[in-house]
Structure formats: structure tokens, C-alpha cells
Length: 597
Image 1 (cartoon, rainbow, N blue to C red):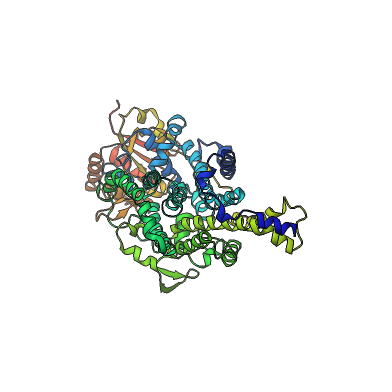
Image 2 (cartoon, rainbow, N blue to C red):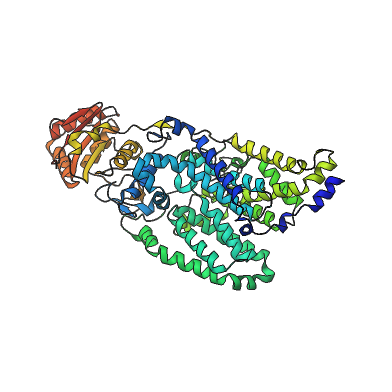
């Protein structure tokens, strides 16, 4: 009975003052931040043991591309456009995952230690910052700090972020903004305890920051936000007019800040030089979750598996059961019901345009089918709504754990458990949290693998270093998926040279997205070599076409990796067209055609 009485005296979560009342208590959030950072370092321990200046995650060119983007910002070039890749046309950086905001944040590290080190710092900071933001958001709804800590853990290191982080998708995994936007909207429209103009100003700044982290996530946040506000309007329909009048100055200021700051960047992304017409990522119909993927750890659909190499939609039976039982037990807790409803809505959108129970399309149409027909929104990959599934599920879990702690003494007393009142209240929520976290952690790819970066040694030979800055290189193999080492070499060399190839999204002849826009005699020769279809001889007209392409592209050096498929044959053909190679280093051969400085 003593435990029951103590439970009755325990402050209910509904009585918790807003997050702002806890700001002065800095020690707990500093401990949370330290714990998240240490976890991030632990997950990437192979990178830091193997050397953060020389290791990157294997299995994709995306990490090397991220290194290129991080280094470009520190280099001080045009933040929106570059001709260092895909010369001479270049690429629109805002149509790509350039994470400009993160690049600016890490520019000092990139300048002092190199972009590879900057990347390895970024993959530690990204989940830690996201987790800490969710911790702050959860503290708005829970009194018990461990509950907020678990909420941050689920969001920052949960299935969605943890899956994409293994490929260095910084545009998706550096995601503190969505959690902080929840705080701002809650303050503007629900609690309304602060000056709405300050909250609106912060909201506007957050939207601007997210644009320069990920335009795709900003669009997803917009869709989710509209649906969330509609649900909130229904929940508060009795005094909606009064709430909107109070929030109006803040909403107006957020709108003004975001419009003024983003007018030109948005134009540049949509209509600027080398912009992509239509969906930026092409068809994304296969990049969806399935009902099965929510409860089976390795049930990712093929489209998602190709993009993230894992199942970011996984929630696990323990979490689903805990949230379901929590809603049944505390159905009058508006915050819990709201966040569970938003998690469900986000999951529904992640299923894409038609329902997949496993990998089989049932043909049942779903609401997300509309997105594929709306400008800008047609570039959204449905599976990436999974970020918001994790965010809302994390906040809901925090509330459930907090409620369990409040009701725990009574539950334990009925079960005749817990003879020590000071400890007993935490036993039940901590046990539930341990089961949920363990079920998620066991299914994720931890610790992350890394491999040593193998940049082409030939780009550092004196003959190439003597070329004027900005000289153009053409390298074989030229397939975008083989460009990783050259991208890192460019960043390490301070973008001293440009490349006719690259790995990014650029417009093709029709303006639609492609990764291989150029078709000229030199590129056709590369393609034939890679396919093993080089002609036995090259006639005068074909040779002239290759020479004209080299001159038209202002190529100062041609590099061939003889270890690549088709490399020896291509080197022999180019020797007949360009003459003897200028230098050989290891497996690489180079023809230096430009004049030295």
C-alpha cells in the first residue's frame, strides 16, 4: 500500500512544465550529449582505429561523394554550382545531396585535416546531434530524464538513421531539425507560453537550415507537417481560432524568414544552371516500405535495399506492442495518442503508392500515390518517411516510459515486486526500454565497416602537378560507380584539377536526371572498352573524333587504369591515337597533353 500511495503522489507527466523550464539544468543534457557522442564513436570505432584520414565505408560511392561535397565547401568555391565535376557543363549542387549546411559547420576541420577526416567526424556527429534534438523534444512531454534519453536514442540511432548512416548519407542522417521543429510547433500552437515571434524566428531559421541539409527531407517534413497540423486542428477544434490568433505573428515571421532566405536558392535548384527537370532521383516507385518490413529485421524491399543496404523501416514487435498497449492504457494522454497517430500516418506514407505486404504488390492504392504526380514532391522516396516514423515513435515511447514510471509502483505492488520503494518505480520502464532497444540494436549493422581509401597515385606525379590549376583530367574507368577514388583525390588536391566524369545527378539531353550526360567519341571509346567491345583497329575518322573530343573538352591529361576491365586494350588504342604515354605508375598510364605552368 505504501507503494500505491507513493504512486499517487508521483507527479503525472501531464503536469510537467514545458521544456523551457528545464533549460537551466544543464548537467543532464550534457551527460546525454556525451553518451550519444560516445555511442557514435563506438559504432565508428573501425574508422578511428584504422585512421580517420584514410578510411571510408565500403560498398558504395556515396561516402566518396560526401567527401567531395564537404571538401568543396571548405575549398571556398561557388556553394551552389561547380565545374570541377562533369566538366565543362558542371553540376547544380542544390539538385544533389551536397549538405551545404553541414559542410559549412565542418569547414574548419576539412581545411585543417582534410575532407576524409571531416566525413568521419560527420558520421559521429550526425546521429548524436539528431538524438540530442529528440532528447530536448521529449523533455517537453516527460518528467523522467531517462525516458527522454531513450527517446533520443531511438530516433538518433534507430533503424532509419542507423541504416543510412552506414553509407554516409549525411543528408538523411544529420536530422536534428525535424525534432526541433516539433518543439517550435508545439510552442506556437499548443502550449503558447513564449513570445510567438521568437519561436517563429527559430522556426524560420530551422527551415532554412534544413533546406541546406536536405531539400528532400524538407519536402517530406512539409508533407508530414501539413498532415500533423490538420490532426492538431481537429484535436483543438474548440479553440482553434484563439490559438491561431496567438500563433499568427510567429507563423508570419517564420514564413518571411524562410521565403527571403530561400527565394534565390530555391530558384537555383529548380530553374538554375544544369537543373534537373522532373523527379531528381528518377523513378522511386520501388523505394517503399512494406507491412512485413516493420516487424521483420531484414525484410527490406529490393528498391530500399539498393538505396540504403538495409531495412530502415524496421520497428520490431516489442516497440509496436509497447506503443499499442500504451495507447490502450493511457488513451486520454493526448500527446501519446497524437504521436502514435503521426507515426502511423508517416508509416502509411512510407508504403508508397500501393500496398506491399511483403515484396508483392497487392495493387491496393495508397495516399502516397498522389506525391508522384506533384511537382517537387515527385522527387520524394516514400521509404524516407521512415525518419518521421522513428521520430514520432520515439516521442511516444518516451511518454509511455514516463507513464510507466508514474504507475510502476502500483503495478509492482500488485505483482508483489520491488521491496525498495526508491528503486522500484524505475524497474518496469527500464525493463521495457531494454527490451525495445535490444530488439532494434540486434537488427542493425553495428559496428560499421570501413575500408582504406585507394586514391589514384598517378594524380600526384610531377607531370600532372605541373599543370595549371583548373586543368581537366579524363579518367578511365569512367562509370560513375567507379569514380570514388578520383573524387577523394580531387578533394585531397584542393580541386586543383577538374574531371570530365563524376558521380552526381545532372540533366541529360532531355533535361531528365542522369549520371552520364556526355556522349562523345572519347566517352564511347571508354564505354566500348568497359564492355569488352573495343574494335581491333581504329580508323582515321574515329581517331580524329577522339582528338576533337579531347580538344573540345580541354582535356590536359588522360589517365587509364590498366587493372580495370578493358584497360590494357584501351591503353593500346590510345597509344596509337595520342602517341606513347607520358608516364606509367603502378597499374596506371597517363598521357599529359596540356602545357605545364
